[in-house]
Length: 53
Image: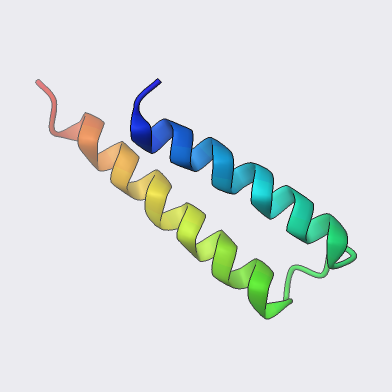
């Protein structure tokens, strides 16, 4: 597993815990921020593989 995948998995788990703690209020500013970070990591990961031959 490469570093980007590890970061994605870790942040996904943190987001799950935070969402549960926030009562699954997905409009909570912290949940939105974490979700945006996760989105950026996923896009970066996808771009890494798109550049490969």
